[in-house]
Figure 1 (tube, one colour):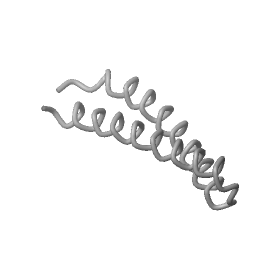
Figure 2 (figure 1 turned 90 degrees about the horizontal axis):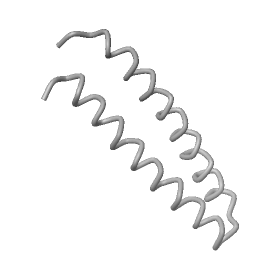
Figure 3 (figure 1 turned 90 degrees about the vertical axis):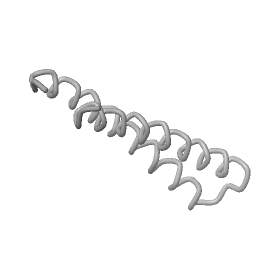
Figure 4 (figure 1 turned 30 degrees about the horizontal axis):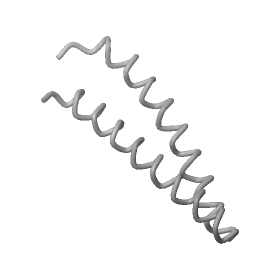
Length: 67
């Protein structure tokens, strides 16, 4: 497996885990109405969006790299 493929796989795994953490935060907020759970859910939701944009950018950028 090339470094480029491993990096893209790592991005995908990080996005999936970030989605899971944001769902945990949102469900915890719905049940407890704590501000910390809200911040956790919002933070991981924002991180998910940023990582998706990064993954798209990396995919476009890495097409020009010949392995």
